[in-house]
Structures are given as C-alpha cells and as structure tokens.
Amino acid sequence: MKPNTLTFESVARLHMAAEPDRQQAGLRAWAAALRGDAAIPQKYEPLLTLKGLSQHPEIALHPTMLWKLEIKAVAESLGGRPRYRVSRAIEYLKSPACAAVRAELRRKRRAQEGRDA
Image 1: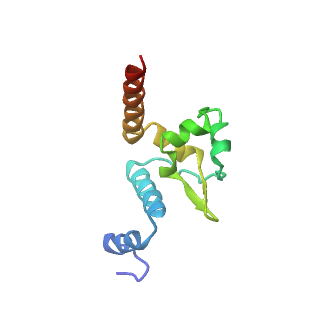
Image 2 (image 1 turned 90 degrees about the horizontal axis):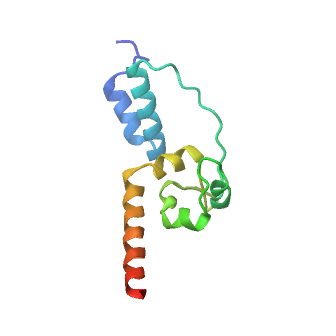
C-alpha cells in the first residue's frame, strides 16, 4: 500500500481526534461524496450576534424568543461571547430538539393562563 493511501482506519483516527464541529463537517462531506453529490463549495458564513441573527430574514424572531428556544445550543464562542451561523441556527430551529422546547414553552404558557383565568 502507498504511504499516502487513505484507509477507513486512518480516517476514523482523524475523525476521533477532531473537534466536534469538524467531525460533523467531515461526516457531511463524506456522505455527500458517497451519494455522488457535486462538490459543495465552502462559502464564507459570518458569525452573528444574537441580535444580528434575529434580524436575518430567514429567522425573524425576537432575540428573547431565540434565547428561550435555547439557540445557544448552536453558538460558537468568539472571545467568550456567543456567535451564531445562520445555517446552523436554521437547522436547529427545524430540529426535533427545538420542537420539544417549543412544546414545553407552549405547555407552560397554557398552564399559566389557566391559573390566571
């Protein structure tokens, strides 16, 4: 075998040694390659504050609502301050985890309204 030949074991070692976000990126690229998808170019995606994220047209939720929906689950730390990528935020907002948080918030609000009435 050639010294630069990739094997499943060598790639698995690289995967296990990488940071979680790089692991996910690697898995997405691997899945795309195996499906035969065209190479997905990596475009620059800025890191936004919570306020900046809330003003994005695809999200358009108040920062307080984003915080209540636990958007911090997809935050990246930039100098100790949370920053967000729009693509990861949208992915999270469509996820079952976020749906569960929404259901719990709805349940609490209805319970509180029932007590107040």
